[in-house]
Image (cartoon, rainbow, N blue to C red):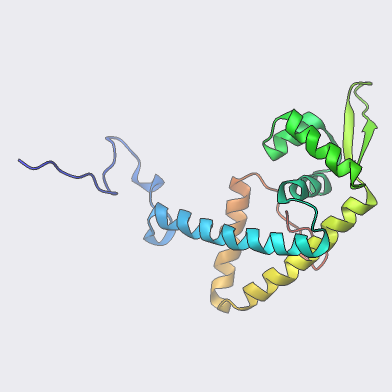
Length: 179
């Protein structure tokens, strides 16, 4: 007797089929592949927009600036949590960005040991300019999409960002669109 090869439709006993079936019957792998491909494009757009404004910043450093811009001043532990890095890594990033004049450190209200990290005017300028360039390039890409597919994209991306606990960007020309 030949051994049966498991298929993508095999489920453990008692598994809920609805968990595996994304909208429109696509396989979960197709959704993941589409998101990974789109993320490559978005990272490329982000890298180009950042390089055109401040070529010495890395994407992780820029992400730190964006977190502070969107969520406000915070201590190093909380900042590390938002970036998913350990506090010592976050502190090294803060040291570099403070030396570049993009971050400030000030005593917090919780006591002498707490230090709050915040953006300087230069940090806000970099976030604003890079975001505006990214917004323009994304607008160009979206403009090349069929109009009928844009509404579905909005809904899907909003659900995706909520699932990832990322604050939704405000609409409009000067709004933040993330990192």
